[in-house]
Image (cartoon, rainbow, N blue to C red; front, side, top):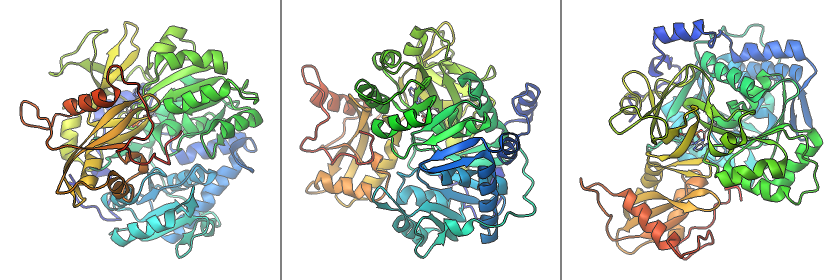
Length: 568
Ligand code: OOB
């Protein structure tokens, strides 16, 4: 799928589809795109809010002035190391204040972060580095028992453009993050708000995650819109629970939106209720964002907690569908307003509004941020469907990308000729214009908000000598919504499921390791001779979760060891 091989100094803008001029004019005239940049945004907040606390991370409390200053100092260190405007830097950091400092340091330099997740492993990080021609990787030493330096070493061995590895903590042979805290530069590069700001990653359906180019103008508009809908201001105290590099906790309104509003970010080192409830009480948190499985854990724990959670005004839940039954429990148990968030790193974000009737909050996934978000629900032939009928969701608007980075072929399939993004979601519009997510027509598993592209896992398994063929599908799960099942046709004697799981775990994020592996002699086929994943999904559902069978998530003979990084 690589259309061009990228060098480290190449200008990437020509590989990043842009909005046509007429749309740019329209979005400017409407006041959506205002010429703001991230670097200038933080500078303005620091001048205005100075000593107001922006970030709380354990014992560290950074004011707006501190954050501004630290970003300048890190930008200086990175610049002196040789990182310049337009160059790519893969950022893989845990939820720590240094992550936010790094974002702003890179924004100020005009260097382009690629926001990897802490869960990503050699295949993913290696791909981001090579595909985008990254010059540097910023990572940590050891987190939750995993040594990111070892990962960096294996990535470095195969990376063609990577020159620097920067490590937060004990850097061993690499550049230490702390050493880049240097005297600020006299001048910073000029950044235009139409330029690229960073790359997000797509949950995707393809063999490797696609890179999503985001620009200052469009992303900042989505922040401003989110802040208005979520009513954020300098009194907002936002608990950062999910990995901050993900689009939801980054921008909906996420840490960037809350900083835009002059509020405060409290960073949770772990998502568990014991850690988070203590922080809510201590820091008077007003808002938090969770994926559905975590929301369920919080709801259960909240019933017996001795912590005071009364400061919490809004609980956002998104990334995967929240059942109406769970949604209904939020207000009685947590005493706060639920906000459902249905978004995507490619752009479009829908929110239930804080003053919506309870029924809308509980039953729907909300409506778009912008009056200029164009939403179409269509049948298989792209004919528009009326409200009440489920169909494919297509969207176009002032913060939805017009194409992935360096992916001409893929873009031709995933965007219409007139620029609508084919989300792969099946939704229904209500008469009031709220969206209800009904399902999906993309080859992806949504494991409690973590997206797994079936093809990526299939490719990883196909590299194993005992795997002749493989198909990965979703299976229902009471807690995560879905888990993954790999149907494998073995070459010779079937390998142990555990061995295959280990094989994937060594290469990909652990949430992508199949939860179950089933050996099969041949795949069921569709009328045109393709593997019928629909039939495979039915097989797994009927075998283990069918009528009369109680759904269980306990380990069975062929279950792979439970995923240590899944929130449970
Ligand atoms: C968010 O972003 P991504 O890029 O990880 O995943 C996007 C996909 C959507 O296309 C949809 O399939 C699913 O995740 N999704 C939901 C959902 N929110 C996302 N499905 C059902 N109900 C929901 N509430 O996941 C994301 C980005 C920004 C804000 C919130 C979520």
